[in-house]
Image 1 (cartoon, rainbow, N blue to C red):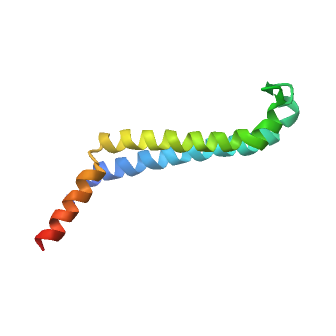
Image 2 (image 1 turned 180 degrees about the horizontal axis):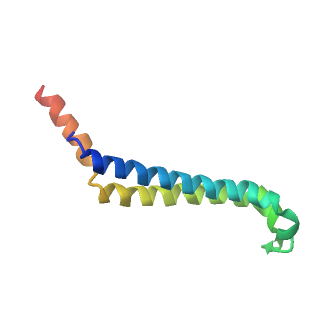
Length: 100
């Protein structure tokens, strides 16, 4: 596996860290934000169910699953931007192991 330029690697790690923080903030706001504002949000309905109850019963789980898919898609884009290709890395490692 070839090494990445240190400046490029630092930029990659910084971007991935920012993305993880964004995902965590979304998760916290969905889990705890709805609970903190239950009184104000109880006037909103989702499929006839009050929003705080829906988010507690099903909405937070659906949001987390959606975040997993969003993370996978964005991670692929970021990896391509920085020239990281998992197929290339694994095949290159296998070639090096075979040559030794």
